[in-house]
Image (tube, rainbow, N blue to C red; front, side, top):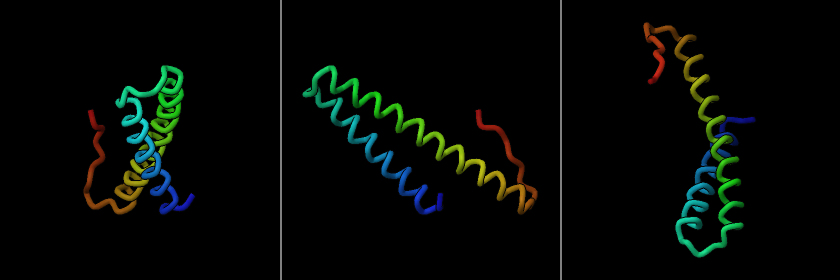
Length: 76
């Protein structure tokens, strides 16, 4: 997948997540509709986490490749 497409997929996923949250917070939908939105949201979260993990790995490879004295540290 191209970097531009990954970026667009990530941004579309975030936008959709925000819309789902707005819909659920409105309190105007049925329980079944909210459950459906929640399930979709969880799928989108997994997709976004995957994109972020891929981006982190790319950054780590670039740092190691350039080896300008930078050190990768685990974030707690």
